[in-house]
Length: 359
Image 1: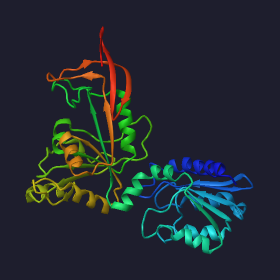
Image 2: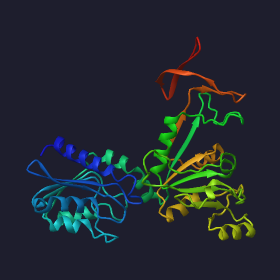
Image 3: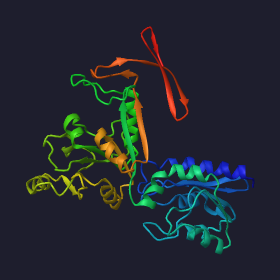
């Protein structure tokens, strides 16, 4: 079979894998397609953490037609016993003739082991078809497995002149309704959201996923506060919300606050402070990793973002740039974007305000 056909079937497997994005964490998204005589006879994907893996679902779908067929899978099949049996055993028992794997397991202790098992069983194995696409799909999983820390996404909205706040009397958000909707979709895809104590006090957010349809996942909410001193009436402390809230403090928190949070069933995580008396960010991420939190959306404020950037712990950014100029008066002046172009490492935005044009 040609490389083009291999790419076609792996691409389909990647599309299948994507269906598990909101439900498989801390596992990777995996898709599988089984082909015999140029015909797809089985397909499947990993649907939920703890449930059957993609290869098993595809083999069940194919039934006896899997014998002497070619299996296309987006990630090296597992060979260890976890919540489910090893996939390599099922592949061998089904008498699959060939396995095409997009990329190897990122775990250095496991990478390539399943390939050797399959080859020793007489199964031909090809590796590396659509490898980069497969790694990009599971960038969160790959980062988590290799660092034991969550993949950090820094998100913020700002004006065309880089302002992130407006006049106190202007309670409207900087970004538009569509950007708000995208933010909620982004929240739905991560394990946890983090904000600082000041953002919690000033904005009093819910940090829930609010979409038209019923969300399939609500992330854990995390508040960073060195002293743990927060208003008791924060929305994040409501027990009616769909996901728990964790307060992250340092050893500076007083025993009275510890008792108060325990009494109100609010989870408290004590992290050692850095040299400036603030929560040690790297230590926090390591602790979250131990809790199987694979992805973290940092929503602000900018001081919190600065701490993450200073420690070089941001993996990706999502920035919404609104067509407004705020300036020192913190008053929004609308600008209509005309063009956005690359200029070396920069971008050039052309906009129009009234009869005047700005570049």
